[in-house]
Image 1 (cartoon, rainbow, N blue to C red):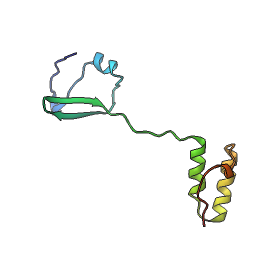
Image 2: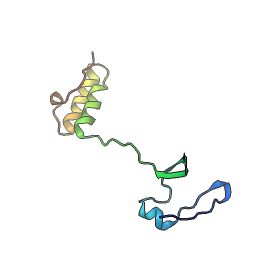
Image 3: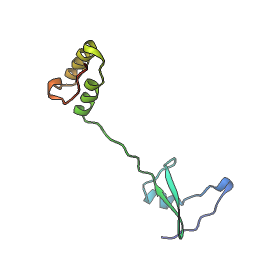
Image 4: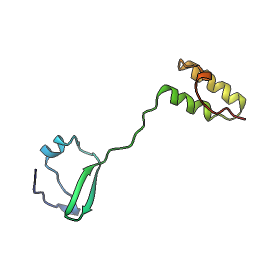
Length: 94
């Protein structure tokens, strides 16, 4: 679907509300603009987000300890998460 838009003050482009709603955009959404051989392409920015599982969080907690006291505290925290620290693959501090 083609739509004409006007370049406003400071180069601002206003995308018709029906179009940005159809594309799942909201006010404040990030988009990329790319120059192509035939014009400009505007596309939504899709953030690369990893959602960590409880096991992965426990791995971070256990692997980032410094010394035995810190490691023991991390084990308590992991147990409080309902997990067994011995069942989580991780690096123990030296």
